[in-house]
Amino acid sequence: MSTRHVVVTGATGFAGSAVLCRLAGQDQRATVRAVSRTRPPAALPGVRWVEADLADGPSLRGVCDGADVLLSLASYVGPDADRCTAVNAAGTAALVAEARRAGVGRIIHLSTCAVYGPGPHRGQDVGELTPAPVSAASGSRLAGEVPVLDAGGLVLRAGLVLGRGDRWAVPALVDAFRRVPAVWDGGEGRASFVDVDDLARLIVALALGDGAGAGVTGVLHAHHPEPVRNRDLMDALAEHRVLPARPAADWSWRRCLDSLAATPGWVSERQFTLLAGDHWYRADAAWELAGIAPGPGPLSRIGPAARWYRERGGVAPG
Image (cartoon, rainbow, N blue to C red; front, side):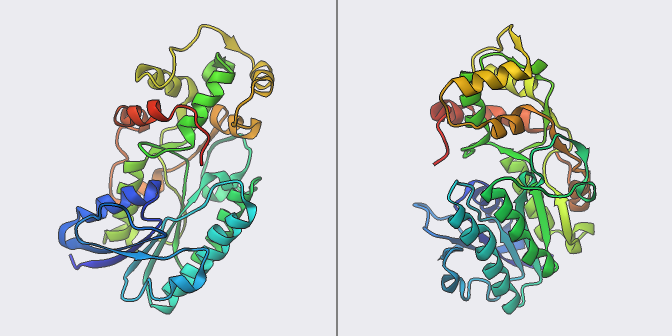
């Protein structure tokens, strides 16, 4: 197999750093140019670092020169609407324009299932849903998909991503459980999750593979095909001492929302609904096209990240 020259943006981020580690272990299959706003304290062997910022268009000049593949993994998911637009929408558009100028043949962009809005969603595939984002972050990430698709690239919409480095999903569950210390409406809500290392494995397979996934374009869901029940996730977190043991009390949805509103914390009702209600999406196609198995699922991967989660607790994302 010929060597691929791969550019990774967001290389010091949650998903980007996992992808970078996997690419660095590909021996002669890939040479890697890592793009981020700052260099990490310890560089990976065989990885060339370039400092650039998606919110600063001129800094992107030349980052894709000589590349075969662009992995667009940078995003901003905070509350600053202007920065959401600058990074996720305008920044991605500038990056894709630079990739097209440089003649990059393959563009893969990481997006989110949050673009679908509040739901509930129960097993739909990409073509069965119309995006309806309700936050600046998800709206700008949907906008960022447009230049990728126009360039003939592949957009991967991921569910909730777990693992060491997760500053949103499990910390939000910890904050919500502190404020709603019960089983949430039977704990039957199901959502799509993926472990960050499995997500990285999928992205790299689609980037470097020569099989059916090599030329695929459009939008795919990128998470484990089997949804996770809320009570099973909470039990797994309790088993690893990230949460207390599941209480006997089972509160109705209305009581859960009332308790959430009455107790100070950072998780909003909309975010609580995303975590505790039905938000799961069909995701078989990406794994089949990549030619790899999705593995046993994200609950089996909680253990290695448990210490990270225990140390972080329910701290709001920075």
